[in-house]
Amino acid sequence: MILKFHIFLLFISFSSLCGCSSGKSVSPSGGEIIVGGSSDIVPEKNTPVAPDDYSALQKKYAFYLNTSPAQITNIKLYQFVDQWLSTPYKWGGTDKNGIDCSSLIQQLLLNVYSISIPRTSVQQFFTDWIDKFGSSTYLSEGDLVFFRTEDDKVVSHVGLYLGNRMFVNAAVSKGVSIANLDDPYWKKRYVGAGRVKMSMLGSSRPG
View (cartoon, rainbow, N blue to C red):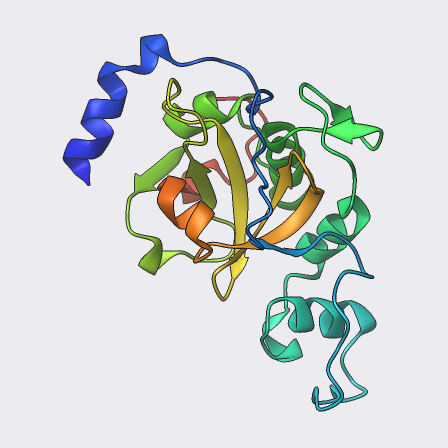
């Protein structure tokens, strides 16, 4: 994977500095979107009922991520996701009227982790504020996940890993939504991941 990233570096001058791809749908009809809003998933009758000591937010995202409410511990993260869920996609957008993938991640990291990162997905991929790695096996909550959704760009889409193979992103056809890394569409286009360096936590300047 190291060689792969070196190759990408050779072609950075040919990559676009747009936030996300606007020419092609990042979210085809292949079923990769897990949830675009609270009404997108209907619990099955046999879905276990979470204990009363868990909050509604924990129960909600435990269901979306197919995990236990006990695993939903970063309440600030999920409050942010919940506030933005179903916001429509807009290339270059930065607010609730429409937002693109890189702006969503930029605002998420700033509001949840007090980390300021560059504006575009390709800048976020090449910033020295993150440690990049290739295998998705080692992903942890809060890691950035990068995709190549257009052939002429090194990186053109970014999301943030939540857990259990799920990530949040702003996709063209579904807006802010939760998707599965193992969906064939995303799996094919996955480039790598990035983890914000511990030394950067609490910093406020972009890198």
